[in-house]
Length: 80
Image (cartoon, rainbow, N blue to C red; front, side, top):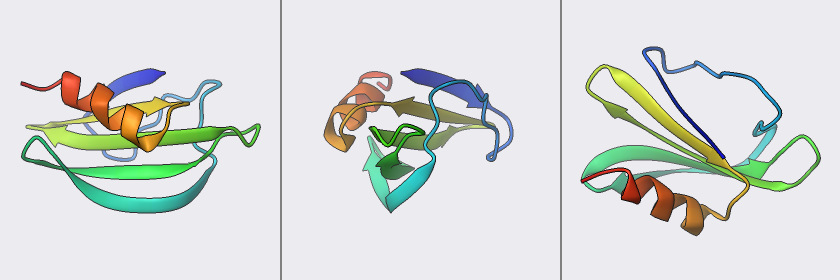
């Protein structure tokens, strides 16, 4: 799992965990914040999900080898 924040929307830190192919993209209301949920696969064709949202001037992104439902629970636990 990777959790990162950046000022720019398109930032990606690189590394071994990458969402290389996106099969589905949807907006999701994450505790009142508009979030983008992406579901796809990683480099080795393993299931992968990513969710991102803005907090003031920062984009928060959580990327993991989890189902979308598990990933949403992780993201929701990060917010009050």
